Structures are given as structure tokens and as C-alpha cells.
Amino acid sequence: MAKTAKLVIEGQTYDLPVVTGSQGEMALDISTLRKRTGLITLDPGYANTGSCESSITFMNGEKGILRYRGIPIEQLAENSTFVETAYLLINAELPTRKELTRFSIMLNDHSLVHEDMLAFFENFPKRAHPMGILSSMVNSLRAFYPELPERTDEEEINITFARLLSKVRTLAAMSYKMSLGHKVVYPSHKMSYCANFLNMMFDSPVRPYKLDKDLVKALEVFWILHADHEQNCSTAAVRLVGSARVNLFAAISAGISALWGPLHGGANQAVLEMLQGIYDNGGDPAPFIRKAKDKKDPFRLMGFGHSVYKTYDPRARIMEKICKKILKKQKRKDPLLDIAKKLEEVALKDPYFVDHSLYPNVDFYSGIVMRAIGIPLDMFTVMFAIGRLPGWISQWKESIGDPKWKLHRPRQIYIGSKERNFVPIEDRG
Ligand code: ACO
Image (cartoon, rainbow, N blue to C red):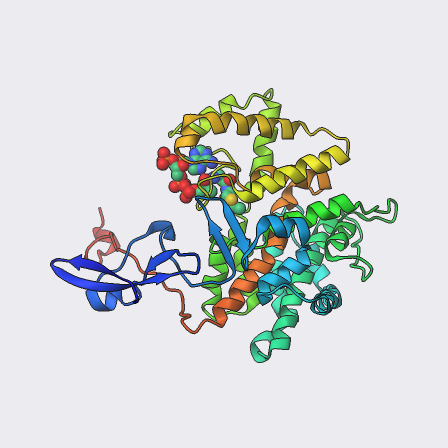
């Protein structure tokens, strides 16, 4: 029998349907609440609001579980590639060998960007942040590939997905090369998706780039870990903007802008800056921990805490392992890793962090991995954006096919002035 909850408002009882997910998670369906009672719910930040039903990603913040289409993140990080994981997220099943080959060929076929886009890059101010550039460039892609709204057959939609996945990676590497004033390196059909990116970033006529399989694997894992995270801020932005039935490029561009924020994807850059700050101040994390605990100080320990995880973020554990592995392989010590470990150790024993359930999140170690690969600091969040693309795309795809889908339009409780009259300027005190 369907479960219901009872809501009593001023003596009147209303039955609310209870929706149960495939993992036993329950929600009150309040979609008819206003019509029946005249009331809305108030939930700043939507932390208790389910905006959709989704079958893409499951996470349990109390137990530290993350699964894409049912498959644990640990298994995907160990055994999959980023391209295969992207296919899984978008198409709901792991590909057969033939499907994977076909998908890879599509990514290769659509990896070039229109040469006219180079002119856009050239005209950004030299100090423009790559996330602002990326968001603008992705929006501009729509002008070059306008088919999507006119043709909606599956093949065309799949081509648009491939275009985005492939071209965003090319655009990111191009922006880096152009920021150096170097000639861009084109994608090659001879390399995998991740290897291609590293080659486009670091190959040069005077210093050919030697691919290192461990760095390629580290990048695969980094992108797999970032590929989706259910209704996070940038994904919610993609779904919300997409709910206006805007084209996919514009919706993804909105997601990139949301991801840029330091409380979201921008945290990976902020963590490295914080660790560098601790290093520059002699290496003792204690003053930073004190600042983070001081309620009068807006400073937060970057890479700590998560809206959903109230335990160790499972991605952070994998990232830490990768981090140690590649530094060992490179026979390199990164002083920032030592500081990160010291900081983590102190914070995890501190009653403030324990009481607030603040643990390292994915960004805590990811910056050190990026540094070891050679990615410059201001490109860190761009790396996150490339990784999150399959998630944004699959969530957008799910949303446009959802029969219950509506234009997103939250309400509010108005707390401003009551009605009052306009006062002519000469009469205002
Ligand atoms: N350092 C110090 N205190 C913190 C931190 C932190 N990193 N994070 C949360 N708190 C404290 C808050 O001050 C607040 O304390 P109070 O209840 O005593 O006033 C309490 O914990 C709850 O904070 P909220 O902001 O309400 O918690 P929420 O779960 O919404 O925050 C967030 C999540 C935004 C990620 C937060 O933990 C944070 O700012 N972390 C640092 C930035 C960061 O690492 N972001 C990356 C997140 S992962 C990702 O987006 C990929």
C-alpha cells in the first residue's frame, strides 16, 4: 500500500504521498501542497528539497557512498576509463566493445573546433580567468553548431553530446596554449581522450611531450571521480537553466559558471592557495585552523566539509592514493602534500571539525594531483568542468525526457515593505 504522511494545519489534516527511492530513501511529495493548503515550503539552499527523481547517481552522505548507475565509484576508478564512464552516465549501461569503439570514434571525429573560434580567444584580456573564458566559449559553440533545437532525433543529440565532450577538452587545452602565446596543438586520432588532452596541453615543437601512462591513468581517475555528483550546485544550474528549454550549450555554460565559485568547483584552486599560504607562513596549520573555527572570521578550511557527506568523501580517499602513487613514481616530494596530511590529521582530531562532521572532500588532494600532472593553478577548475561534463549532459538528457518535468520556478516568502505610495523626489527627506 502506498505510504502517506499526515500534515495538520490549523486543525485540518492533509495526506501527503510518500515517495520511496530504490535505496529506501523517502520523500514527501508536496507538489499539490499550495493548491490544497495555500502554503508553500521554505528551504533556503534547497538542502531538504528533492528537485527531481533521478536514476543516474546515488550517494549516501552518512555512509560515504557514491555510485554511478549503481556501480561503486571505487570500482569505476580502478577499472574504467573516463570515456567509458561518460558513456555509462549518459546511456545508463556500460558499453559493449563495439559501442565503446563507436563512441570513441565519434569523440575523435568531433574533437576539432572551428578555426574562427581562435579569434575569440585572442580578444580576451590576458588576465581573464579560464573559467569565464570556458563558459563564454561553450555558449558560443551554439552559434557554430545550431542543429540541436531544429533536429531532435537521437543521432543528432548524440552528436551534440560528443561535440561537447570532445570540443570542451580541446578548447581548454587551446586556452592554455594561447595564454602562453604558443601555437595550439591539435587533437590526434592516435591518442585516447585523456592522452590527447595532455598532449594538447604540453606538447611543443621544441620539447615533444612524452606520455606517461601513470599520469594518463591519474587524469582518467581524476575525471571519473568528478563525472557526476547528483544535484550539486552546477548540475542544479544546468537542470534549472535547461528547464526553460534553452539549448544544451547555454545550459552547460550556466553549469560552468556555477562551478567556478570557490564554495563549489573553485575550491580545488582555493585549497592549493591555502596550502601554499600555510607553507609560506612556516608550515604550521594551527593558525589556519584557528581562523576557520573563529565565527567572526569568514575564512573556511578549504577542501573540508560537504553539503551531503558528513563523513570522509569517498573520492578524497581515492584521490589521496593517486596523489601518493604519482609522487612516488616521480620520485618527488611535494611539501604541500606533507602540509595537507598534517592539516588533515590536526583537523580530524579537533572537536570543532568532529562536532560539525567536517572531513576532507574531493578537492582536498586533487590540487596536488593536478600539480604533479603539470596543470597550472588557474586551470584546476577547468579540469573539474571537463570531468563534470558527462554528469551535466546525462542530467540534462534525463530532465528533458522526464514526463513530470516542469519549468523550474521556486517561490519565496516575501518579507519586504507592505504596499506604500510613491513619493515625488522633492518630497523625500
Ligand atoms: N571550515 C570551517 N567551518 C566550516 C567549514 C569549513 N570548511 N564548512 C562548514 N563549516 C561550518 C560552518 O561555519 C557552520 O558552522 P556553524 O553551524 O557553527 O555556524 C557549519 O559548518 C555548517 O556550515 P554550512 O555552510 O551550513 O554547511 P554546508 O554543508 O552547507 O557547507 C560547504 C558545505 C559549502 C562545502 C562548506 O563545508 C564549505 O564552505 N567548505 C569549504 C569549501 C569547499 O571545500 N568546497 C568544496 C565542496 S566539494 C565540491 O563542491 C566539489
